[in-house]
Amino acid sequence: MASLVLDASVPDADPASRPKVGKFRKPVPPTFDDPVERRQYFKGRLALAARIMDGEGWGVGCSVGLSCRDPNEADLVWVIPRGKPLRAMGSKDLIGVRLDGSIAHPVEGREQWMPLHLVIYAARPDMGGIATGHTPHARVFSSRMERPKMCWQDSCTFYKRIHPLPFELALDPVSNAGKVAETLGTNGKGLILQHRGLLLCSATIEGAVGYYIRLENLLGGQLLVESACKGLGQDKDKEMIEIGEEEIQFTFDNVGSEHHAWMLAMPYYSRYDRKTGGAMKV
Image 1 (cartoon, rainbow, N blue to C red):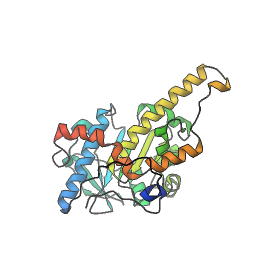
Image 2: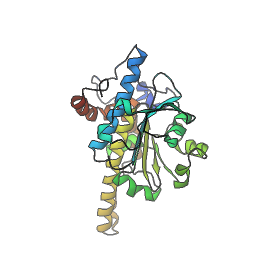
Image 3: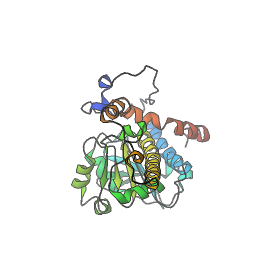
Image 4: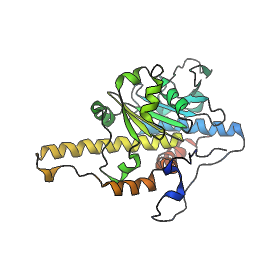
């Protein structure tokens, strides 16, 4: 069955613990009894993730990495290959890699490994999708080794869940697997990759894509506000005002779940479902 993987030990994964601000019928991922169909759907969603990232203007070079855990085999990860244009990515192009780095499902003429992704999948069995990128705002922000500020309501989704990862650890994640896992933590949603960009992870590839797009845009907004404040001088009245702690926690409790992460990506997936015929055909 293709469903969200939620860890009940994580507070934001427990719907009963969230304060109620309204009721509405929420969409949910489809389910499959046939393991072949289930795998095809997951691979199709990964291929569509590549097209979505390209649609955001990020399909340049090899600066985007995407992967998802196989729904049938927990030690198998599907990754997008190097050299294939994101806008043309299909299920047949994806490479199957074991957590130990061995290639289980090769594609002739294509290579990819994504060791940082594999390290995170091994450390976090609850993670089902990862998106990395050297996108414009992420690259600028990554030089600072800071966490994003809680400037907007949307920022609260990442409250205490995004952590800076030093450049040298990301260069050789296999040798530094313990430190990478420690930096991400047991409930982290992503990493600021120093001098590189972003890594966002979620229970689903849709959630990882939704998180990536949102955080990239939030970082751009933060950089813009900081520049504006600096241009106005050092007057305390001109400084950036962050959201209060209580308000941040309330918002996080409502929008910090994996289901919310999945829903963030639905508008993007709907667009490419119409263009391609959906995950089972791409």
